[in-house]
Amino acid sequence: MVIDFHTHIFPDTLAPKTIPYLAGLSGVAPSTDGTFGGLTASMAAAGIDYSVVLPVVTKPHQFQSIQNFAAKINQKDGVISFGGIHPDCDEPEEKLAYIASLGLRGIKLHPDYQGVNADDPRVIRIVNAALKNHLIVVFHAGIDIGLPEPNYSTPRMLRHMLSALDQPLAAPADAKSGAVVLAHTGGFRLWDDVEELLVGQPVYFDISFSTPELSDEQLIRIIRRHGAHKILFGTDCPWGNQKAYLEHIRSLPLTEEEKEQILWQNAADLLGI
Image 1: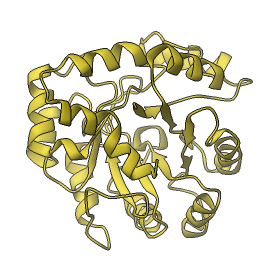
Image 2 (image 1 turned 180 degrees about the vertical axis):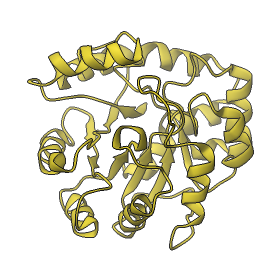
Image 3 (image 1 turned 120 degrees about the vertical axis):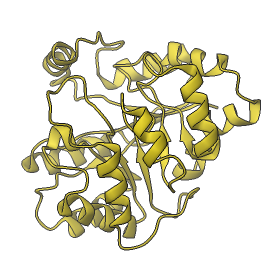
Image 4 (image 1 turned 30 degrees about the horizontal axis):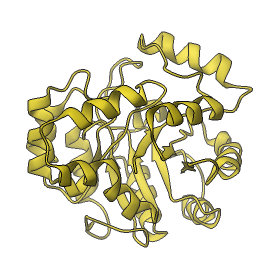
């Protein structure tokens, strides 16, 4: 089994405009058309059993429409959708309880697209409430190549956010618990800071969109110092090609046990699969 913990899709009516726009910002050619059908076709071609979709609420008024879309596609054809929330949404505790009531296992926060530092009190309030509702919180971490400075989610901000939570985290976690996942191996293009500040913390790293720039040597060092039991396979599809990323991870000089943990076991435990 293989679980891709980090993918993105858009409604069929929005994808034809959204994908070219984002591709223009980042300079990255997409590997799918950004639709549900495009993702499931990519999964079939790559041999991926489940993909986690991570929607981003870029404006507070998008909250309900994004939850509606997430609930519609969740648990369909191997797709598991998370929900989302904006730091400026009112009554975040109630909104996060609502997300949990829909059967969505987590939320995505993207500080850069939301214009709020990862250690802002509004973000910390959301993470605390999400964890109380046993939700998984996935953070974009590090630089976003499609957006200019400033960087809203540095490893130092993320470490500060973790230290400010009401209750200490525990990792590994299971489907009955909340958890925090830091995308892009803890901080895209800031991996030296990740090694200094975040390796060993009770959080998960997904390795999405990292391998084109992060050396195999540093990736393996981070995996082993952090613990393979806290690493999740991810691609950032459509911005990462699922088949190519999977082949690359399988080619690394990791043990078979480490590969199994990364490719599916850790994610299955978190998602209750």
